[in-house]
Structure formats: C-alpha cells, structure tokens
Image (cartoon, rainbow, N blue to C red; front, side):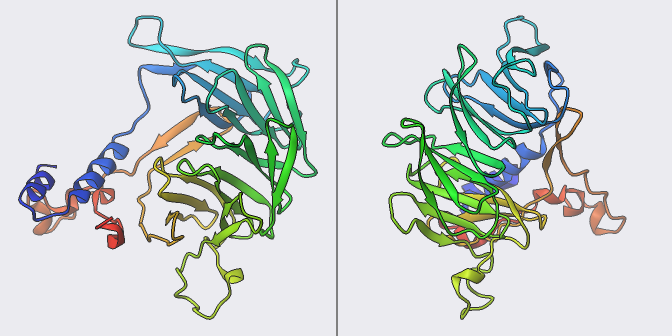
Length: 338
C-alpha cells in the first residue's frame, strides 16, 4: 500500500489504481464475524435478504419453505458478542404465508412500514409491517422469480416483476393493478433491477442470455441489448444476436452511483457494463464469493494465499509470487480517465 501511495504522490501512477487496490484489499479481508450471530429461525434454506436503508437496522429474510422473518440487527446487550434477534415471522400458521419458496423480499425504499415479497406460488404480496398482514396481492400466470422497487422514484410507484413469462410486468403500488408490460425477451425473466440514478431506467435479465435496459416512459421501451463482444464478433449481426452471457443470466445489480451494471450468468462469468453506453468494460474479476445453502447460513469465501514458487525471484522481498493473485490489478484500462 505504501508503494501505491508513493507512486500516486510522485505522479507515477493513476489515483484510481490506489482506489482499486484498497477496494480489493478490503474485499479479501472479509471473514465470518466472530462477535455477531443471527438467530436461527428458518428450518429450510434462505433464498433472499434485504436490509432497510432508512435506519439500516431491520433485515428481512425469505426461505424456501415460504417463511419470512424480520430481524432487529441492533445490539442492546452492551456486550461485544451478541445475537441478532428475530422480531416476528410469517410462519406456516399465518393465513397469508406464501405456499411455496420466497424468491425476493424488499423493504419499501422510503418507509419501513411496508415490505414486499414474491414467490414461486405466482404471487407478489404487499405487507403492512406493523400488523404483519397483506395489504395487496398481485397474481401472475407463471412462477415469480424476482421483483424490485425503484430506490429513488418520486413520480411513480412501479414494481418491476420477472416471471416465467418473457414479458416484464410493471405493477403500480398505488392503483393495485399491472400498469403495462415490456416485451422483448424470448425466455423467462430471472432478474430485474431499477437504476439508483434514474427512476425510469430498468435492467432485466433472462434465460435467453440477454440483458436489456429499458426506459419505461417510452412506448418502445427497450433502449439497448447488452453485447458481451461490444459488436466486434460480428459487426454485421443484428441486435437479436447480442448476448450478455453464454448461458442464462440469473443476476444483476447497479453500482451505487448507477453508472455501471453488474451481471452474473450460468457461464460462471461476472461482467461489468457501462450503463449509459452498454459497453462491456472487460473487467476481470477474482474469485471472492458468497454462498447460501440448505443449512440456512450465508458464508463468505476468499482465495487461499498463493504458495511461493521456489526459485530465485520468489525469494526476493515483495516478489509477486508472494501475493494473493486477486491483488493484481486486473481491471480494464478502458476507464482509467473516467
């Protein structure tokens, strides 16, 4: 780190390299928290988590058995080590419990008095947190894989919903009806996400290997279809041939500033896109990852340190052979000036 600081101070290196090195260091330093535990309530796997942004205190979890649990993350014990307790749950005996696996839970972005959940039982439910009762239910023809509310919208209250149907459905929280649909995908829509920068921009991912960006204000809707090859593989090909991954695209999210979009697919690839131009930035990621399983736990993993190569160069202090490979600057240089 001192080397990065010296290079930056002397003008030999770009300031962005220091930022990337520190970000990578922090990611690789993640480990299981030895002082905090979460009360075990789910009897089956945990599919989805969401922490509200108003206080950052309450967390929702949804399980494969249809159960939803609300946790309080605050520490009132005055002890260093503590367990986050559950406040309440929508369990099997609840009249409004989901019949099948809960795939997504989300707090209403501006008020913890409301949260939402969607399930394989083909429903999206709007909940009153205080009474723990359903205020509204949206029914769909196919399995619901994902839903999302805009974190910044003030002029609309649309919930984007991805289902087994290729059409993306937009449900209006105020009217209680589906306002309109977005057509363009040819497979099941597995993930949807609103931009945190523009309240009318939506990203969707599908089993057709495509990721699309939409402007929901426009009649045509689709702004562009992301192309992993940035048009270089076949300049003569139509947009219909553009794919974001070589397989199903089952996850996506915007960066906090909304300038980039991160996608993951069943091709074991994670890609970072310029959300304005749709360009694949060609960032090469390391192998840090999180895993969730039927044991009801979420674990963080990091690569093991690389064993030093027994040669003359590897014995020198500061040799790259002594470094974890994820510390190498594997970022694309395309945005060095950005």
